[in-house]
Length: 274
Image (tube, rainbow, N blue to C red; front, top):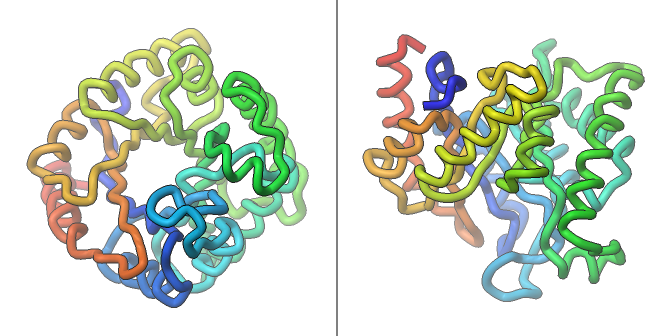
């Protein structure tokens, strides 16, 4: 088990996929998952659907996050994940800081998580006029841009309400996980528990090389909508995952699969005294 596992409570996230739905349905889903007790509501940063009709209904990520920041009061919010290529890093830092402040109700700190990755969906790039380049080039840009984001947060007036958590998604062992070890507060991975466990070992080794305590990085992974907490949940938990995100898609957003995940979370955290 990774050294990050023991002290952390389990959290349940939901990715509300902003495709094939009218916005009122998305708004209702965000409000409903907060009411249910979900810990984090994510959208994603694409311009077109990733499944179903390629030209189907779709909405933009960051304007939506600003709306969620006003419409919710407790739940953390973020993109899973924002594409580094689509915005100048200083602008993205300012956008994140602004949404952080919008989400800070009644004097509380903000609730934004900056989820970020290097980008991969070629249609977004070609349709919106971004250079697609190569996977290695996009990873190098992410490596170079994260320090610029962090530096801009230090210059903005007003400053963010808190240290905005940075979630980095991706499992590349030589580049991505080294970027995670240097910059991330949360790592989001993909695959079964055996794959995730191996990635944790690689990430921990990068942390050791950089002199960073791997326990500082929360370990996150996705679970299928029909996943069983007693199955995949227990397997991910055993290898150190503590933030598990279930995907729900439009146009109707069936949230019923979340109930067993929330019950499982509460049972686990009660046992920890969390």
